[in-house]
Length: 144
Ligand SMILES: [Zn+2]
Figure 1: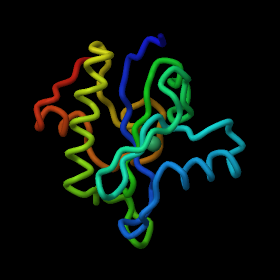
Figure 2 (figure 1 turned 180 degrees about the vertical axis):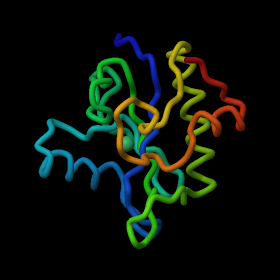
Figure 3 (figure 1 turned 90 degrees about the horizontal axis):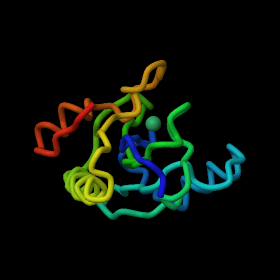
Figure 4 (figure 1 turned 90 degrees about the vertical axis):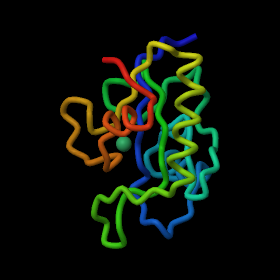
């Protein structure tokens, strides 16, 4: 089993009315980026449904330099209609994210919870909210 040190939250950087899921993201990552599979391990759709991406046993392609020991979770949304960063996730998505993180922390108790933008050198807003503060607020806690 891989050692997982962090659960990394991402966004798809799509507007709220874009109802995409793992299949659409996989298509972009494989066809355009020429990756072998979708970069994320989980995708949470606008309706809160979780879709499985790359198998957990395999390193993803979601945070440069930190793929070997992390899992990537992508929330669909994250920009407004003009492409500006916006934490516009649905209540269902946040609820599902809490449940998924709880479940994953059961398997990987030492994993911290981070946003993509919390890694050094990342120049994106992804996932467009402060994941650490959010995790503490909803009682998930985190360790560094
Ligand atoms: Zn990201």
